[in-house]
Length: 295
Image 1 (cartoon, rainbow, N blue to C red):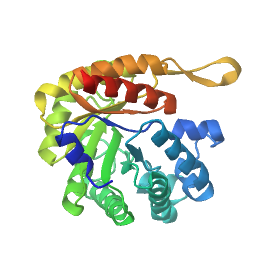
Image 2 (cartoon, helix red, strand yellow):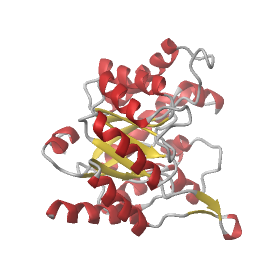
Image 3 (cartoon, rainbow, N blue to C red):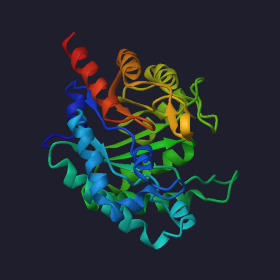
């Protein structure tokens, strides 16, 4: 990709991203509770196939399978010393699969820890963790840093600061909201948009959460507060156990496509999928985006 994702956005394009990785791997046999990042080394061909399927469905960027490559989560999994190897492998698989047909975004998730005074983790510790990740991701060849599924604005802000300070890459950040437009930590979408822009984020938005309606609520609150490009990355609704104990989701590709049209009306310029989505969802949203461009 010769242009950066920011150049494409600033020229007025609507960008289509990929969909779920973790829930897709669970269907392929990933043992629940096992870090999906292990598959970057153990089953790279499966990770690459998922990436390629999303590109074939219309994704203009794919996201590395590196969401949880932070110290606390890797330590808990007994993989602390392997975290950067898993991270680099995730980038390598994505970079190869992209083959200059798509941008590669680096997924950086939450540590799952509470910052002081509510928890034991200090700001210095979390900044050091994020710095280590973003520097390794840039060195491995990603096109932008993608903080996602965050709940705590202080943690998310620390990540954005480190990425802006220690890399030259575009940085985006999305948090997960409920139907009221708040995260589990009580962060309001409007406040998040303002704070993240102040920290230097290039793109802000919402991902995962309580389905398309929650994404809509967050975008509606964010749009008046920022002039940054907005990203809408909905999951496939709320999961439930179906027949035979199989996890099912309550939003179909056609339904998310209808919601995606609403996201665009609210100012979103990036459409992608989160938990429970697959290439069919991306194809449906890409179709909506192409028709929206022509209107």
